[in-house]
Length: 380
Image (cartoon, helix red, strand yellow):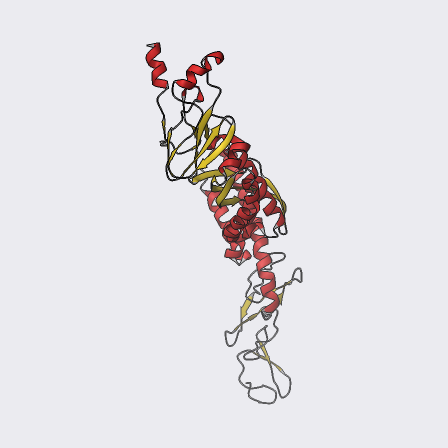
């Protein structure tokens, strides 16, 4: 069995790699003791680049195609000559396959808020997230800077570093822009393009290329969003006075529908009703005052008790509550209703006491007199 294994390991290799995963970036072809034989056949597929390392140095880089490798490892003969090294050939050779496809749908996001100075809201904290894609641009530099001699290298080994670099770059861009926080959504594409330009040198230093970068969302703090919602609501409502009346009416309705019972609930409901009533009174007062300044003045009457002025159509004084309706008395002659303070009927001239005065001689006559008993003048 030992002899069979020895003979099997001395066959010339056929080196190739097919990737069944979606995140493998580098794969080292497994050869026993890293002793690739002279004349080994190498097949490189599309979206792959192969790096041939011979005796510790990069010997060649192979693009898609079929190649024959030259090493100092001759089948069986080299192995036998290496008896002084414990039959371990000193001529090491390795092939690394680099996946050059685009690694898309890589997610990034801010683990901590980004501080930003906004013209309208002052200093605020922003959070952002999105996706990006990258690929290996320089395999040799990538080998030297990142994966080294690992058996396998995946996107998980590098995305943590890339995400932090992306967040640092986007924070710098947001800090340099003077775009208002509420207008940032209009500039997602412009900010994304600027991020690609700014971050490309950081990726290139690792042998990578930032193919695309997208901002999906930049969110504001909850407190700022509430302020914006209130401002938007006021702009939509327009008439603040009507909105105040509506809100007050809604609050009174909710208080009336309160299912609580008992004297305590009744007292609380009554107190709430009084308080809401005062709020409504104040809101109505604020609304009516500017209207009264522009509207024409109506006739007013003076209260006989407190002297306050009230509109003519009021039945009670708005200051003391005294009735503004004067007592009425019918004329003894024509039945016209006149104020009790009047001494003569404004319609027929009859005195309130039921007496008439002759307009010619001035004699006092009875209310039903038709001619003056002194001068005979007819009584009108």
